[in-house]
Length: 252
Ligand code: PGA
Image (cartoon, rainbow, N blue to C red; front, side):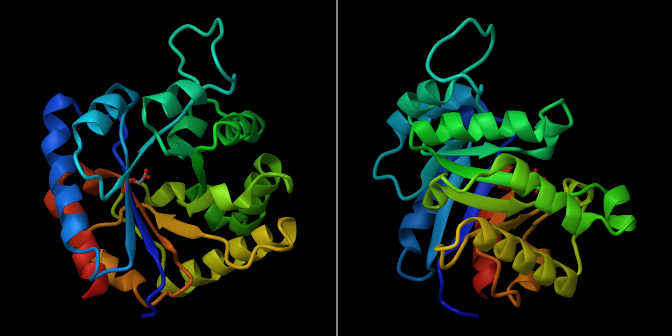
């Protein structure tokens, strides 16, 4: 395994309250203690309700904080119940997950996701842009077509690629305990990187993560895929022990 930087990003989804601070605190301590041991970056994407609280409470921050979605409109506006990228940035978010399949399934289109990316980039937030195919699309051989379409429809060449991390999350693997085969995944990650290089001619090493049922047991199987730049971890990131074990086992 090469010693390149790997991302371990927790996606808390609709989870967590003030008491969950202890989970973050433990992960933060682990991150600090292991900083010379592993070349890693830990980012926790929490609900909007926690971002400011955690930012204030976390002393000597060794992790980064993020959120999981925003409205496409910048600044303030008549959008009941919504939160904009600038509000999230001011609350302490450094990263933001956009295009997650759980939001796509609620009606988010590629076009809307593009507007959200633009809004988030205008606030200099770092984007974790999720793409992925359904089981039906996979079984009918459409994976590559779908991924290309998702990328092409939401990403344009004047975006700041240094602010965008891609996360390949096959929908059939999210929360199902099913993960892609190593050779299949390896090919897909490479093809996503090629697609990004077509749009951003000068980008040397686009960052592409894998997400979907990553846990402390199966993480080892991904170590052989050097092209993977890290992981987006859902359910298992809601436990400090499971999350820390994922990082430790990855480097074992
Ligand atoms: P999971 O979720 O790890 O629980 O499968 C991943 C995600 O939705 O980002």
